[in-house]
Length: 95
Image (cartoon, rainbow, N blue to C red; front, side, top):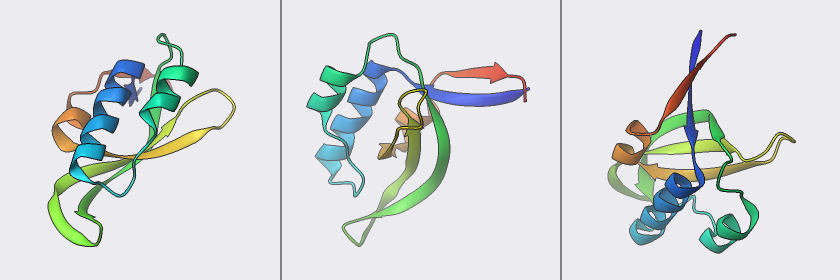
């Protein structure tokens, strides 16, 4: 079994708003998320790494996450608050 962390639409909007407030490098358009992502969609994190810069300057650590938004290979990259990332739900899946 493998633990797969995922975003819901509400959690993605929350993380995106924090990223915007903090001026993180990787941000997404919240209005596009509201329009184009169904509330029931679960969006798995397919890659993540610890990140500590915004606009070339050191900031508190946060997570750079690559998130699958559909079953067709679409991906977004978002710099996410560490606490929000650590609180994301997950599913155990067979590998």
